[in-house]
Image (tube, rainbow, N blue to C red):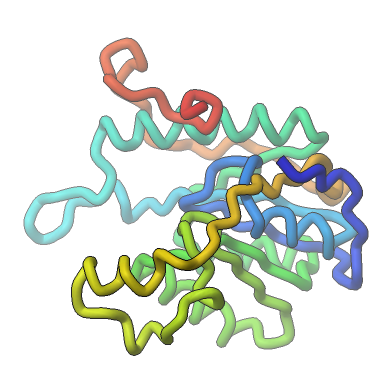
Length: 218
């Protein structure tokens, strides 16, 4: 594991790290970049109320078991952040509204996140960039074996089958080093950490086959 203990801010006063599908400290290059470039950092997770609202087919994005796993993952992440002198701000709001309020309240000048393959997740990211063009936006891949820049082809020329893809990428070296932030900038001194009124967790960990949280994946 690479020791990345000494972050050196390079120009952004208040950064916001938007946790999404990367609820971990270890092997999180995007979080490391945020730590290196900011003097103070808000670590945020958005719980979208729309996840719990049935769609026209009566289905919810977030079911009981998934919510139980996600909530446990957030608790685990919060413990990891606390160990580095940070806190996790959980916001129960639509992404654009919740982040917009934080940007205004704390005068955020840089936003970081892990790259996401989701359609709606990327749509929110694009809308944020359009709405706050004066801010610095940065994302990094944290969940893929290969970096896009290392591929011997552009995504528009992605091979049509796995076998063809495998033959093209087999010669590539895979970076197996874990790039981990060993320290993080502090949160803004004026930050408040109210617990939002989240939907109840109705599934106990003992009744589930899986336990949420990066520490349980080791």
